Length: 492
Image (cartoon, rainbow, N blue to C red; front, side):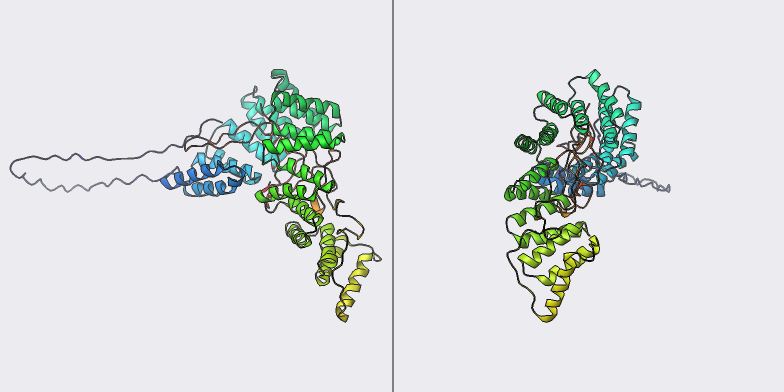
C-alpha cells in the first residue's frame, strides 16, 4: 500500500515587541474600525495529540503479538473516535480487526478509508480480501476486478480473483487466472498454492502434494502451504505427516486457527484429550465465543473426566448456537449420569426432544417420563459411572454430533480448511476435504484464512507510517461466515 500520511498544520503567531527609550509616546488616535478576531483553526478530523497518543498505544499493543490484538483494536478505535479522518489509525484498526477475525468490521473500516477518498490499490485489495473472508464473495470479486481494470498487469489482483472464483466454485475461471499469473511469474507462491488447492478440490492428491511442496521449496516458511500440505497428507491417510505439517504451520503463524483446529481434531480422534484441549483453548484465548473451539474443548474436557467443566462449556456453546440437538443430548447425559443432577438433565432432554423431534417410541421420551415420575416420588437417581454423552445414549463422544462435514482447504486467497466441529459435535479431522466447518471466532464472522493472495496487512510501528497491507489474501475453499472471531485472497 502507498503511504497514507495524515496531513495537518499548525497556525502560529509571533509578536514583535519594540522597546524604545525617551519620552513617552503620544497617544494614538482612537481606531473605530471593528477588530477582526482570527478564529483558531478547527480540527478537520485529522490527528490530534490525544488521538496520536492512542494510536501509539495501539502500535505498542500490536507488537505484543496475538495477545495484544484486542488491546490494539480498542486503542485504534479510541484514536478514530477522536479523529475520524486519521487514516493511519483507520488502517491499523482494520488490520487489527483482521487479526481478530472480525472480517466484517475490517471491511467496513477499509470502506471508510475509500469513502474518505483514500485512493490506494492496497486498500481496495484489502477490502476485497475481508469481504471474501466474511462470505461476500461477489462483492469481493467486484473489488478485485476494479483493481485489475485500472492496472491490467496487476498479478496480485489476479491471484485474488483466482481465490474469489475458487470460493464461488468456478474452478475453470480460477484456473485461468492462476495460469495468467504463473505465465509471468512461474515461482509465484500464492498462485502455486491456489493451483494446489484446485488439485486438492479435484482429488488429484499427487498433483496437490507436488504443488504444495513446490511452494515450500520457494518459501519454506509459508504457513498456509504447510497447512494445506497437511490436509493433503491427511486425505492420503498419512496422519503423522499431516500432524507434522500442521504443527509447523502453527509454529510459523500462531494465529492460524485452521491449523490448530485440524491438529486438535486429530488429537481428539486419537484420544489425546490433553493435547486437543491445549489447541482448542489457544483458539478460545483469542476468541472466547469461538463455537467450534468451545465444543471441541468441551469434548476434550469430557475425555479427561472433567465433567463439570465439560457441562459448562457445552452450555456456553448452546448460548452461542442454540438448538443443537447433539449438544443438548450430551449435556443432558452428563448431568444425569456423571453429575447426579437429573432435574437439570430433564430440562436438556426436553430441549433435545423439541429440537430433534425423535419418534414417539424413542428411548429418550421414556427416560424423561421416568425421571419426572422419580422426581415426584422423591426417588431421583444419583450420579453413576455413565459413559460418554451421546446423541441417543449409544454414541461415544468421539463421534461427530452435527458437523459431519470435513474441512476444506482454502483456495489460496481464501479461508483455510477448518476441521468440522459444528453443532456441538467434536471437531473431527477432515477426511476428504468435504465442506469446511467454519466456526464463529468471537461472536462475529468466522475466522478465515486469507486466500493465497498473500499476507495480511501489517501494521506500522510508527505514527505516520501506514499499516502495510502486505500481500494478497488467500482464497477460501468455501465461502464461510464469520470469525472474532471471523473471513482473504492471493499474492502477486
